[in-house]
Image (cartoon, rainbow, N blue to C red; front, side, top):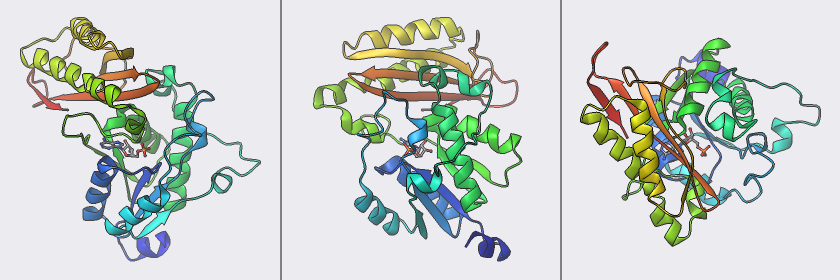
Length: 281
Ligand code: AMP
């Protein structure tokens, strides 16, 4: 199908997912639908991106309702391979983005990004899309995939889409179903901490250490929250910054009970060299 669509100069779109679809996925699909035809979505719970103590076995799987949602959203093809199709017995080739993969999420989840980049590389090779859509909810993942596409001369444009949130501003995630009502309420602390950081930045605060200290204090005020990391990093390198003077992410990873949630605030200068920022939360 890809070869024929390419020959007909059509824009092939791909939205990779692990299923358990929610409005975050739906936003990627809606954008891809506007820009591409045909549109392919994939559902694959990728075993290689889960650590041995992580939730691969209990990750929510809702295939029937997912495929119905995708059909209604106008997805032309659903690609939902079996693990053995993607990783046959003798599978032995991996894609690893050096440096970026080791920091933050990579440090907390060893091997995670190697699994992500390998499966995304395979999906891009199989589907051959002109455009592939990812969410900024997983900011480091999106950055890594963009880097991989550039480094390996892939013929797919990586499109990064904004974070979709619940009415109380918790970022949508397939893992939110793990939260009991008390934890679900506590989980809003991630957004509230990011919003406080945004206020500090809007008031002219540029000292990254000070921002991090405020973030920690805010997160620690929620008894059910255990912080994995709360950092201000350069949006390109994901290295910590001392002062906020260019495009940055404020990144959070926080355990609420056993559930690990991530969220972020992206800020970019309003103009080159400007000290005024646009905020994406
Ligand atoms: P997942 O199924 O969790 O692997 O996510 C599939 C894609 O949806 C990834 O590119 C995610 O970054 C994106 N995504 C997940 N949650 C959200 C959200 N709340 N807003 C925007 N994109 C999201």
